[in-house]
Structures are given as C-alpha cells and as structure tokens.
Image 1 (cartoon, rainbow, N blue to C red):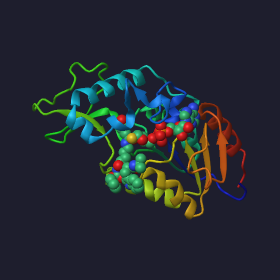
Image 2: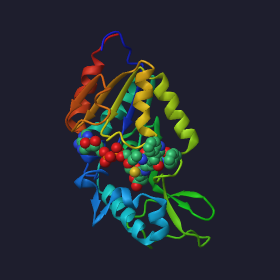
Image 3: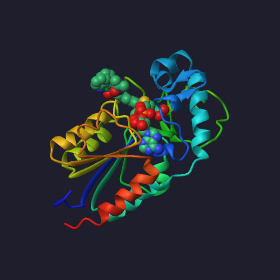
Length: 238
Ligand code: BJW
C-alpha cells in the first residue's frame, strides 16, 4: 500500500460490524429467530402473508438494537470521516449504529429500522418507540405501516444507489467490513472499485467470496481489527 493517498476512502459495512455490539447477523446460526431464518422474513411476500409475524421480528430487533451501543469499529469509522476529505460510508445495516457513533457521510443502502412507511400513502416517518404500542403498527390514515427497509426483490432507493456506485467508482481505497458479500447490488461495489484501480481491504471473521479479489484480508472481529487498521493507515505518508 504505497503511493496512495488517504484523501479518498470508501467503506462498505455489513451486519458483522455490529456483531461486536450484540446485534445478530443475518446468515449463519446467528441469523435465526425462533425457527425462522432472517432471509425468510425480510421479504415482501412474508409481510403480505403475515404482517404481524414480520413486525414481531422487527419489534424484537428494534428492542435489541436499542439496548446496544456502537463499538470501536463504528467509532473508528466516524473518526476516519473527520480525517479524510473524500470519505463515504456505505452501509447495508439498518440499525442506526453508525449515526449513533457520529458518522455523517453515510449512505444507508437498505434503509432504516427506525423509520416506518405507510403502505397506503408511502409517507415515511421516524419512529423510535420500543416496544411498538401496537403490532402491526398502523398509520393515522388506517393503512398498515411497514419498516422503511429494502427487502429481497425490492429496489433500492435509486439516488442512494447511484451515489454508492459513484463513490465506488472513484475510490482509491475501499474497506469492506463484516459483510458476507452475497447480497446484490451491494456485493458488486467492491468489484467496481477494484476494477477502477482501488486498493481493497476486507475485514471479516471468515473468508468470503470477495476474499480472493481483495488486496488484503484481515481476519478477526471488526471491533478489534478496524481500530488497528486505522492506526496503520494514518501512518501512511503520501
Ligand atoms: C464479522 C463479525 C465480526 C460476523 N467482525 N465480521 C444479481 C444476482 C443474483 C441475485 C440478485 C441479483 N440482483 C438482485 C438479486 C436478488 C437479491 C440478492 O442479492 N440475492 C442474493 C442473496 C442471491 N437482491 C435483492 O433482492 C435486492 N434488490 C434488488 O436488487 O432489486 C432489483 C432486483 C430484484 C430482483 C432481481 C434482480 C434485481 C435487495 C436486497 C435487500 C436486502 N435486504 C436485507 C434486509 C434489510 C432489512 C433488515 O435488516 O431487516 O438486507 S437482507 C440482509 O442481507 C440485509 C443485509 O443488509 C444484507 C447483507 O447481509 P450482510 O450485512 O452481509 O450480513 P450477513 O449476515 O450475510 O454477513 C455477516 C458477515 O459478518 C459474515 O461474513 C460474517 O463472517 C461477518 N462477521 N461477525 C467482522 N465480529
């Protein structure tokens, strides 16, 4: 990693960065809730079939996340933002822990668990009630509310996605932290950055499909490895 500037860093995070805070990841044993797999509940079909069940899961997750604190990895990324002129943090997470750590230049690809959307009027509102007073929650218009998140088969917000692609295309250094790198279109961002010449560093507790493309793979918990990585990056002179 020589001859590169630290003026342009793009970071892509996934559920693994919040694992150290106590937020369950999606895949693997951790992703189980009752007898359901997370991937089976995060779909429009599941919501259509049984909105109360899906909302029970989201209500449970909201309660759990509300009791969690950002960890050293979230905090380090917030600090990184202060040091880099051109910094973008792209997250697949809906937990809001990056904001709570102080990150501002943030793109939430899959929405936020702290926002609800009316299925009739499409209006989006902040909502931090834990637990929700009624499940499933309803809008003042009587319509069913849903989490303002992106489920499988749904489109990501086009402006947010376009901004993420632009960031990946111009990035010189991309850090990919705590994602299984299997969910599209987020999983394409590191390849786009790499194709445009970015140096790619992956931090994960295990290897992923991305690992073979990465210039460096750092195996270990994000809360331990991201602060160490930042310490090293800060020392790199142009
Ligand atoms: C640690 C750690 C520690 C643990 N430290 N690391 C092209 C090809 C094939 C399929 C598709 C395609 N384009 C679109 C699709 C379909 C689909 C898709 O990608 N499917 C694949 C699974 C095959 N994508 C979509 O449907 C997307 N929509 C779309 O593209 O629309 C257009 C379209 C539709 C259909 C066809 C074609 C085009 C939408 C995707 C929305 C994803 N939504 C969810 C739920 C969000 C709401 C919620 O949170 O409730 O987003 S699913 C879930 O997966 C969530 C996550 O953000 C996302 C990614 O998961 P993530 O973050 O990587 O978590 P895990 O659990 O998978 O991994 C955790 C990692 O951390 C692991 O690697 C651990 O090792 C590691 N780890 N502890 C560091 N301490």
